[in-house]
Image (cartoon, rainbow, N blue to C red; front, side, top):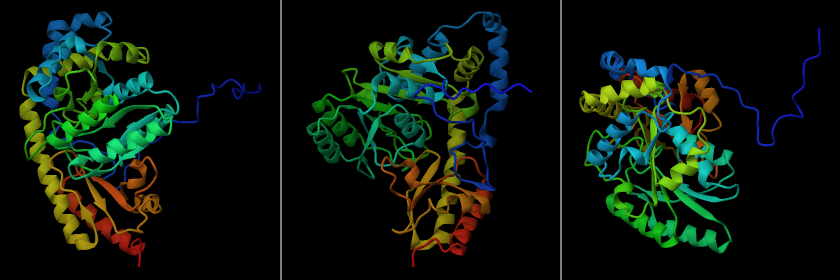
Length: 397
Protein backbone atom coordinates (compact mmCIF):
# COMPACT_ATOMS: atom_id res chain seq x y z
CA UNK A 1 0.00 0.00 0.00
CA UNK A 2 1.34 3.44 -0.96
CA UNK A 3 2.31 5.90 1.75
CA UNK A 4 -0.35 8.51 2.41
CA UNK A 5 0.49 12.03 1.35
CA UNK A 6 1.36 14.34 4.26
CA UNK A 7 -0.13 17.85 4.14
CA UNK A 8 1.55 18.86 7.39
CA UNK A 9 3.89 21.49 5.90
CA UNK A 10 1.31 22.82 3.42
CA UNK A 11 -1.45 24.17 5.63
CA UNK A 12 -1.72 27.95 5.82
CA UNK A 13 -0.58 29.73 8.95
CA UNK A 14 -4.16 30.79 9.69
CA UNK A 15 -5.72 27.34 9.30
CA UNK A 16 -6.72 25.30 12.32
CA UNK A 17 -8.14 21.89 13.02
CA UNK A 18 -11.91 22.04 12.82
CA UNK A 19 -14.39 19.44 11.70
CA UNK A 20 -18.06 19.87 10.85
CA UNK A 21 -18.91 18.65 14.33
CA UNK A 22 -21.81 16.47 15.28
CA UNK A 23 -25.16 18.06 16.05
CA UNK A 24 -25.99 16.64 19.45
CA UNK A 25 -29.35 16.75 21.16
CA UNK A 26 -30.18 15.78 24.70
CA UNK A 27 -33.59 14.60 25.84
CA UNK A 28 -34.30 18.11 27.09
CA UNK A 29 -32.57 20.44 24.65
CA UNK A 30 -32.42 24.02 25.91
CA UNK A 31 -29.06 24.83 24.31
CA UNK A 32 -29.79 26.12 20.81
CA UNK A 33 -32.35 28.78 19.86
CA UNK A 34 -34.31 26.71 17.38
CA UNK A 35 -37.83 27.90 16.50
CA UNK A 36 -40.94 25.87 17.22
CA UNK A 37 -41.17 23.18 14.51
CA UNK A 38 -44.95 23.16 14.93
CA UNK A 39 -45.16 26.76 13.71
CA UNK A 40 -43.05 26.34 10.57
CA UNK A 41 -45.22 27.55 7.64
CA UNK A 42 -44.65 24.45 5.55
CA UNK A 43 -47.84 24.55 3.47
CA UNK A 44 -47.39 28.25 2.74
CA UNK A 45 -43.79 27.66 1.68
CA UNK A 46 -44.85 24.84 -0.63
CA UNK A 47 -47.41 27.15 -2.20
CA UNK A 48 -44.76 29.88 -2.49
CA UNK A 49 -42.41 27.50 -4.32
CA UNK A 50 -45.13 26.49 -6.74
CA UNK A 51 -46.26 30.04 -7.48
CA UNK A 52 -42.76 31.40 -7.84
CA UNK A 53 -41.55 28.60 -10.06
CA UNK A 54 -44.55 28.74 -12.34
CA UNK A 55 -43.66 32.37 -13.00
CA UNK A 56 -39.86 32.47 -12.85
CA UNK A 57 -38.62 28.90 -12.60
CA UNK A 58 -36.78 28.95 -15.91
CA UNK A 59 -34.62 31.79 -14.63
CA UNK A 60 -32.84 29.21 -12.48
CA UNK A 61 -30.89 28.40 -15.65
CA UNK A 62 -28.95 31.61 -14.98
CA UNK A 63 -26.85 32.73 -12.04
CA UNK A 64 -28.83 35.29 -10.09
CA UNK A 65 -27.84 38.86 -9.29
CA UNK A 66 -24.64 38.89 -7.18
CA UNK A 67 -26.46 40.93 -4.50
CA UNK A 68 -29.27 38.41 -4.40
CA UNK A 69 -32.76 38.35 -5.91
CA UNK A 70 -33.81 41.97 -6.65
CA UNK A 71 -37.45 41.35 -5.77
CA UNK A 72 -36.62 39.89 -2.36
CA UNK A 73 -34.28 42.79 -1.63
CA UNK A 74 -37.08 45.20 -2.57
CA UNK A 75 -39.53 43.40 -0.26
CA UNK A 76 -36.99 43.43 2.58
CA UNK A 77 -36.40 47.17 2.08
CA UNK A 78 -40.15 47.79 2.27
CA UNK A 79 -40.42 45.68 5.42
CA UNK A 80 -37.55 47.55 7.09
CA UNK A 81 -39.09 50.89 6.14
CA UNK A 82 -42.49 49.86 7.47
CA UNK A 83 -41.43 48.07 10.66
CA UNK A 84 -37.96 49.38 11.60
CA UNK A 85 -38.33 52.99 10.35
CA UNK A 86 -35.35 52.60 8.03
CA UNK A 87 -34.87 54.58 4.84
CA UNK A 88 -33.29 51.98 2.56
CA UNK A 89 -33.66 50.61 -0.95
CA UNK A 90 -32.89 47.28 -2.57
CA UNK A 91 -29.54 48.72 -3.66
CA UNK A 92 -28.50 49.33 -0.06
CA UNK A 93 -28.37 45.64 0.83
CA UNK A 94 -26.85 42.29 0.02
CA UNK A 95 -28.55 38.95 0.64
CA UNK A 96 -26.33 36.53 2.55
CA UNK A 97 -26.29 32.92 3.65
CA UNK A 98 -27.89 33.62 7.01
CA UNK A 99 -26.91 36.51 9.24
CA UNK A 100 -23.73 34.63 10.13
CA UNK A 101 -22.24 35.28 6.70
CA UNK A 102 -23.23 38.95 6.86
CA UNK A 103 -21.58 39.32 10.26
CA UNK A 104 -18.49 37.44 9.10
CA UNK A 105 -17.82 39.52 5.99
CA UNK A 106 -18.29 42.78 7.91
CA UNK A 107 -15.88 41.62 10.61
CA UNK A 108 -13.29 40.77 7.96
CA UNK A 109 -13.81 44.06 6.14
CA UNK A 110 -13.32 46.18 9.28
CA UNK A 111 -11.06 44.22 11.61
CA UNK A 112 -7.31 43.82 11.73
CA UNK A 113 -5.73 41.50 14.31
CA UNK A 114 -5.47 43.38 17.60
CA UNK A 115 -8.22 45.89 16.83
CA UNK A 116 -10.62 46.52 19.70
CA UNK A 117 -14.24 45.59 19.06
CA UNK A 118 -16.70 46.63 21.75
CA UNK A 119 -19.40 44.12 22.72
CA UNK A 120 -21.94 43.61 25.48
CA UNK A 121 -20.58 41.90 28.61
CA UNK A 122 -22.25 38.70 27.40
CA UNK A 123 -22.64 38.37 23.64
CA UNK A 124 -23.91 35.85 21.08
CA UNK A 125 -21.24 33.16 20.95
CA UNK A 126 -21.42 32.78 17.16
CA UNK A 127 -20.30 36.37 16.69
CA UNK A 128 -17.82 36.14 19.57
CA UNK A 129 -16.19 33.13 17.92
CA UNK A 130 -15.95 34.94 14.56
CA UNK A 131 -14.43 38.01 16.18
CA UNK A 132 -11.82 35.86 17.88
CA UNK A 133 -11.11 33.95 14.66
CA UNK A 134 -10.13 37.17 12.92
CA UNK A 135 -8.00 38.43 15.76
CA UNK A 136 -10.26 41.04 17.34
CA UNK A 137 -9.62 42.16 20.91
CA UNK A 138 -13.18 41.89 22.28
CA UNK A 139 -13.76 44.36 25.10
CA UNK A 140 -16.94 44.08 27.16
CA UNK A 141 -19.27 46.94 28.07
CA UNK A 142 -21.39 46.66 31.22
CA UNK A 143 -25.16 46.37 30.83
CA UNK A 144 -28.29 46.67 32.91
CA UNK A 145 -31.95 45.94 32.16
CA UNK A 146 -32.08 48.84 29.65
CA UNK A 147 -29.05 47.63 27.71
CA UNK A 148 -25.55 49.04 27.32
CA UNK A 149 -24.58 51.53 30.02
CA UNK A 150 -23.49 54.70 28.14
CA UNK A 151 -21.17 55.92 30.91
CA UNK A 152 -19.24 52.64 30.86
CA UNK A 153 -19.13 52.72 27.06
CA UNK A 154 -17.60 56.20 27.12
CA UNK A 155 -15.15 55.21 29.86
CA UNK A 156 -13.97 52.06 28.08
CA UNK A 157 -13.48 53.82 24.74
CA UNK A 158 -11.49 56.59 26.44
CA UNK A 159 -9.32 54.04 28.29
CA UNK A 160 -8.67 51.96 25.19
CA UNK A 161 -7.66 55.00 23.16
CA UNK A 162 -5.41 56.22 25.96
CA UNK A 163 -3.69 52.83 25.88
CA UNK A 164 -2.97 53.31 22.19
CA UNK A 165 -5.58 50.79 21.02
CA UNK A 166 -7.54 51.14 17.79
CA UNK A 167 -11.27 50.94 18.66
CA UNK A 168 -12.99 49.87 15.44
CA UNK A 169 -16.72 49.50 16.17
CA UNK A 170 -19.43 48.51 18.62
CA UNK A 171 -21.28 45.26 17.93
CA UNK A 172 -24.67 45.12 19.63
CA UNK A 173 -27.86 43.05 19.65
CA UNK A 174 -30.34 45.68 20.90
CA UNK A 175 -33.59 43.70 20.58
CA UNK A 176 -33.98 40.65 22.88
CA UNK A 177 -30.25 40.56 23.36
CA UNK A 178 -28.64 37.16 23.00
CA UNK A 179 -28.13 35.79 25.63
CA UNK A 180 -29.37 38.29 28.25
CA UNK A 181 -32.81 38.89 26.76
CA UNK A 182 -33.23 42.63 27.41
CA UNK A 183 -34.24 45.18 24.78
CA UNK A 184 -32.30 48.42 24.75
CA UNK A 185 -34.55 51.39 25.46
CA UNK A 186 -34.95 54.23 22.98
CA UNK A 187 -33.21 56.67 25.31
CA UNK A 188 -30.25 54.29 25.65
CA UNK A 189 -29.98 53.91 21.89
CA UNK A 190 -29.80 57.66 21.49
CA UNK A 191 -27.16 57.89 24.22
CA UNK A 192 -25.10 55.07 22.68
CA UNK A 193 -25.20 56.82 19.31
CA UNK A 194 -24.11 60.05 20.98
CA UNK A 195 -21.16 58.39 22.72
CA UNK A 196 -19.99 56.44 19.69
CA UNK A 197 -20.47 59.51 17.50
CA UNK A 198 -18.30 61.59 19.81
CA UNK A 199 -15.53 59.03 19.39
CA UNK A 200 -16.10 58.42 15.66
CA UNK A 201 -17.00 54.74 16.07
CA UNK A 202 -19.53 52.84 13.92
CA UNK A 203 -22.37 50.79 15.41
CA UNK A 204 -22.86 47.27 14.05
CA UNK A 205 -26.54 46.48 14.76
CA UNK A 206 -27.56 42.81 14.79
CA UNK A 207 -31.37 43.00 14.67
CA UNK A 208 -32.10 39.33 13.96
CA UNK A 209 -34.67 38.93 16.73
CA UNK A 210 -36.69 42.13 16.29
CA UNK A 211 -39.70 40.32 14.77
CA UNK A 212 -40.02 38.00 17.76
CA UNK A 213 -41.78 40.50 20.03
CA UNK A 214 -44.77 38.99 21.78
CA UNK A 215 -45.51 41.74 24.29
CA UNK A 216 -44.62 45.38 24.91
CA UNK A 217 -43.95 48.15 22.43
CA UNK A 218 -41.44 48.03 19.59
CA UNK A 219 -38.31 50.16 19.88
CA UNK A 220 -37.03 51.66 16.66
CA UNK A 221 -33.73 50.50 15.16
CA UNK A 222 -30.35 52.15 15.65
CA UNK A 223 -30.24 52.51 11.88
CA UNK A 224 -33.35 54.69 11.86
CA UNK A 225 -31.82 57.07 14.43
CA UNK A 226 -28.66 57.66 12.42
CA UNK A 227 -28.32 60.05 9.49
CA UNK A 228 -24.59 59.69 8.93
CA UNK A 229 -24.23 56.17 7.53
CA UNK A 230 -22.45 55.10 10.72
CA UNK A 231 -24.79 52.18 11.48
CA UNK A 232 -24.30 48.80 9.81
CA UNK A 233 -27.39 46.59 10.00
CA UNK A 234 -27.89 42.82 9.83
CA UNK A 235 -31.17 40.92 9.73
CA UNK A 236 -32.30 37.36 9.12
CA UNK A 237 -35.17 35.09 8.11
CA UNK A 238 -33.85 32.21 10.24
CA UNK A 239 -35.99 32.94 13.29
CA UNK A 240 -39.18 34.04 11.52
CA UNK A 241 -39.27 31.32 8.84
CA UNK A 242 -36.66 28.59 9.34
CA UNK A 243 -32.91 28.37 10.10
CA UNK A 244 -32.55 25.68 7.45
CA UNK A 245 -33.33 28.21 4.71
CA UNK A 246 -30.11 30.11 5.52
CA UNK A 247 -31.14 33.58 4.41
CA UNK A 248 -30.01 36.87 5.92
CA UNK A 249 -29.16 40.35 4.72
CA UNK A 250 -26.67 43.15 5.24
CA UNK A 251 -27.60 46.84 5.03
CA UNK A 252 -24.73 49.31 4.97
CA UNK A 253 -23.22 52.25 3.14
CA UNK A 254 -21.94 51.46 -0.33
CA UNK A 255 -18.28 51.65 0.67
CA UNK A 256 -18.79 49.13 3.50
CA UNK A 257 -20.72 46.77 1.23
CA UNK A 258 -18.00 47.04 -1.42
CA UNK A 259 -15.28 46.06 1.07
CA UNK A 260 -17.38 43.35 2.73
CA UNK A 261 -18.17 41.98 -0.71
CA UNK A 262 -14.53 41.07 -1.23
CA UNK A 263 -14.85 38.45 1.52
CA UNK A 264 -18.12 36.93 0.30
CA UNK A 265 -17.54 33.45 -1.09
CA UNK A 266 -19.68 31.31 -3.36
CA UNK A 267 -21.40 34.11 -5.25
CA UNK A 268 -25.05 34.96 -4.73
CA UNK A 269 -27.36 33.18 -2.31
CA UNK A 270 -29.62 30.37 -3.48
CA UNK A 271 -32.13 31.72 -5.98
CA UNK A 272 -34.40 28.80 -5.10
CA UNK A 273 -34.57 29.98 -1.48
CA UNK A 274 -34.80 33.65 -2.39
CA UNK A 275 -37.69 33.05 -4.76
CA UNK A 276 -39.54 31.03 -2.13
CA UNK A 277 -39.12 33.66 0.58
CA UNK A 278 -40.12 36.48 -1.76
CA UNK A 279 -43.40 34.75 -2.62
CA UNK A 280 -44.04 33.97 1.05
CA UNK A 281 -43.47 37.61 1.98
CA UNK A 282 -46.15 38.67 -0.48
CA UNK A 283 -48.66 36.52 1.37
CA UNK A 284 -49.25 36.06 5.08
CA UNK A 285 -45.83 36.41 6.65
CA UNK A 286 -47.13 38.84 9.30
CA UNK A 287 -49.91 36.43 10.26
CA UNK A 288 -47.32 33.67 10.53
CA UNK A 289 -45.09 35.82 12.75
CA UNK A 290 -48.05 36.65 15.00
CA UNK A 291 -49.00 32.98 15.35
CA UNK A 292 -45.41 32.03 16.05
CA UNK A 293 -45.09 34.71 18.71
CA UNK A 294 -48.27 33.57 20.43
CA UNK A 295 -46.73 30.12 20.74
CA UNK A 296 -43.49 31.63 22.07
CA UNK A 297 -45.13 33.64 24.85
CA UNK A 298 -46.89 30.53 26.12
CA UNK A 299 -43.57 28.72 26.19
CA UNK A 300 -41.80 31.59 27.92
CA UNK A 301 -44.51 31.64 30.59
CA UNK A 302 -44.17 27.89 31.01
CA UNK A 303 -40.43 28.26 31.59
CA UNK A 304 -40.95 31.12 34.06
CA UNK A 305 -43.42 28.96 36.01
CA UNK A 306 -41.14 25.92 35.91
CA UNK A 307 -38.16 27.90 37.18
CA UNK A 308 -40.21 29.24 40.06
CA UNK A 309 -41.58 25.83 40.97
CA UNK A 310 -38.24 24.04 40.85
CA UNK A 311 -35.67 26.64 41.91
CA UNK A 312 -37.70 29.14 43.95
CA UNK A 313 -35.61 32.06 45.15
CA UNK A 314 -32.32 30.20 44.69
CA UNK A 315 -31.90 31.69 41.21
CA UNK A 316 -33.03 34.81 39.35
CA UNK A 317 -33.95 35.17 35.70
CA UNK A 318 -34.96 37.60 33.00
CA UNK A 319 -38.52 37.69 31.64
CA UNK A 320 -37.96 38.79 28.03
CA UNK A 321 -40.69 40.46 25.98
CA UNK A 322 -39.60 38.49 22.93
CA UNK A 323 -36.93 36.24 21.54
CA UNK A 324 -36.23 32.59 22.23
CA UNK A 325 -34.31 32.30 25.49
CA UNK A 326 -34.03 33.19 29.16
CA UNK A 327 -30.94 34.20 31.11
CA UNK A 328 -30.68 32.59 34.53
CA UNK A 329 -28.31 33.66 37.28
CA UNK A 330 -27.27 31.10 39.89
CA UNK A 331 -25.57 31.99 43.19
CA UNK A 332 -21.97 33.19 43.07
CA UNK A 333 -19.64 30.20 43.22
CA UNK A 334 -21.92 27.95 41.17
CA UNK A 335 -19.92 26.52 38.27
CA UNK A 336 -22.30 25.50 35.50
CA UNK A 337 -19.40 25.29 33.05
CA UNK A 338 -17.71 22.50 34.98
CA UNK A 339 -20.76 20.22 34.90
CA UNK A 340 -22.19 21.15 31.50
CA UNK A 341 -21.07 17.99 29.74
CA UNK A 342 -22.12 15.78 32.63
CA UNK A 343 -25.57 17.36 32.76
CA UNK A 344 -25.83 16.85 28.99
CA UNK A 345 -25.13 13.15 29.47
CA UNK A 346 -27.84 13.13 32.15
CA UNK A 347 -30.33 14.50 29.63
CA UNK A 348 -30.36 18.32 29.76
CA UNK A 349 -28.40 20.66 27.49
CA UNK A 350 -27.69 24.38 27.97
CA UNK A 351 -24.99 26.94 27.35
CA UNK A 352 -23.26 28.41 30.37
CA UNK A 353 -22.48 32.10 30.73
CA UNK A 354 -18.71 31.83 30.25
CA UNK A 355 -19.32 30.75 26.63
CA UNK A 356 -20.82 34.19 25.93
CA UNK A 357 -18.23 36.20 27.84
CA UNK A 358 -15.23 37.91 26.19
CA UNK A 359 -13.35 37.37 29.44
CA UNK A 360 -14.56 33.84 30.18
CA UNK A 361 -16.47 34.94 33.28
CA UNK A 362 -20.05 34.11 34.17
CA UNK A 363 -20.01 30.37 34.78
CA UNK A 364 -22.83 30.88 37.29
CA UNK A 365 -25.19 31.87 34.44
CA UNK A 366 -27.02 29.71 31.92
CA UNK A 367 -29.04 30.47 28.82
CA UNK A 368 -32.11 28.28 28.40
CA UNK A 369 -33.92 28.36 25.03
CA UNK A 370 -37.68 27.85 25.00
CA UNK A 371 -38.47 28.18 21.29
CA UNK A 372 -38.19 24.56 20.17
CA UNK A 373 -39.46 22.32 23.03
CA UNK A 374 -43.13 21.83 23.79
CA UNK A 375 -44.68 23.30 26.94
CA UNK A 376 -44.75 19.84 28.50
CA UNK A 377 -41.09 19.31 27.62
CA UNK A 378 -40.19 22.66 29.17
CA UNK A 379 -41.95 21.78 32.42
CA UNK A 380 -40.42 18.32 32.63
CA UNK A 381 -37.00 19.47 31.45
CA UNK A 382 -36.62 22.30 33.96
CA UNK A 383 -37.70 19.93 36.74
CA UNK A 384 -35.12 17.41 35.56
CA UNK A 385 -32.47 20.14 35.36
CA UNK A 386 -33.10 21.11 38.99
CA UNK A 387 -33.02 17.46 40.03
CA UNK A 388 -29.71 16.81 38.26
CA UNK A 389 -28.05 19.89 39.74
CA UNK A 390 -29.23 18.88 43.20
CA UNK A 391 -27.94 15.33 42.78
CA UNK A 392 -24.58 16.61 41.61
CA UNK A 393 -24.43 19.11 44.48
CA UNK A 394 -23.66 21.96 42.09
CA UNK A 395 -24.85 24.73 44.40
CA UNK A 396 -22.17 26.09 46.74
CA UNK A 397 -22.57 25.13 50.38
